[in-house]
Length: 242
Image (cartoon, rainbow, N blue to C red; front, side, top):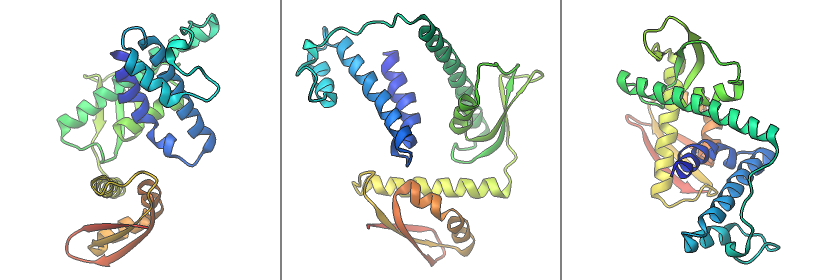
């Protein structure tokens, strides 16, 4: 149960941008890890959920592999002690990352600030662990949607958010809200991630200027070939297949 939650609610969700990204090596690494994990899971599942395990395995099976999960060998734990130690340390560090992220998100809820609105800083009580690399800190920043994570020893609570929203941060939040609306429309229209679209946007001049400044990012995230703006009193979005 813990494994399936970790895989779907954390690894897969956190890897979506990598899987859809433009870096072939990083995309292959993210997908490779996912496929390896599901394959191992199917083999461990096979004795007591044989049909589900078989279905997962067949979706992932290569042509040179056994035709059934029940003809494969049982996975073996690695004998490499150095690798085991590295894995255990990474698992512990990731638990710290997820705990800090969870506390940060709870603080956002208490403050009434939605997650799509970027904030300047998340302050964390205590000293930063030397094992938390910049890549792991980046996960916290992205998950809580803050620009910086700082450790302090004089906080009265586990985490504290800097709630000062600058005009630049507010504009970034508007862009994220807009992207979410477009993604919702894509989903309602039954489009797949690979489907390219043309966006037709009606907006006030001030909002149009903000969206124009982020045109490249919007096109990349929502798979838009083009964005066409027109003036209006309210924001309206319409999309067509490219």
